[in-house]
Image 1 (cartoon, one colour):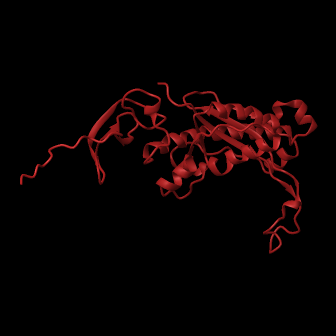
Image 2 (cartoon, helix red, strand yellow; image 1 turned 60 degrees about the vertical axis):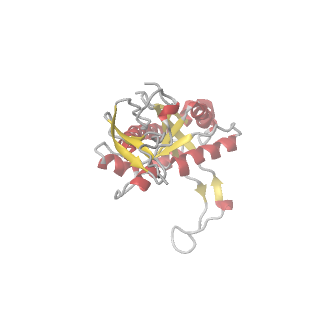
Image 3 (cartoon, one colour; image 1 turned 90 degrees about the vertical axis):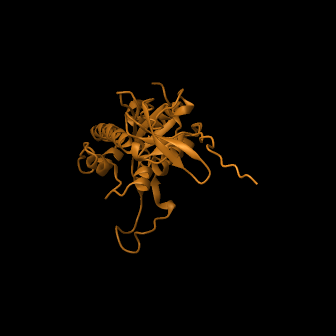
Length: 262
């Protein structure tokens, strides 16, 4: 089945290096931007195209000359992933709308990298918050709650070691990042059948009546009853493959009109 190109991705970014008078108390709440000694950057990005097995990644280690000169330089990471984003027709990330994508764009504009086209976003954090009442909406919790492995354990001080240019730590971060892709895809697929609406209409990509779940798209639909609105009536169906409910986009024609005889 050919459908939209869905990109599942995740980034790992560094700390800012900054000055502060105190670790707690009244002086710790506000830090002026003048106190930033060095801006945060993206250590690595991992991604997988939905329906494919391979997980790809790019990191600051992939450009050795640039890394040797400045191990905080993420130009290569951002420029490579920018071209990947241009191919996507839908994006999947956990908190991607508020963090991952804005962070990528901030680094793009910093490096003078051309912008990307607008794209449909399927943010699993928003899905979890809007449609469910989980005890936690963290990716680690959702994966474990739904029956999958959780996030990879990390050694103490991993982010600090990465910031200091420790190659071993950066390689561990890449592995951690790739595991996040596995659990993100698992959570994404699990949540989708329970979501009321989809940002993608598969009928734009496929012919005939299809399941609206962009990870399914099956034509095995069973028509069950009707959906009523204030002004129209629609046939309702359930997907026999994934269990997603939907209804026809076109309302049924008015039946059994009552004619009033004067």
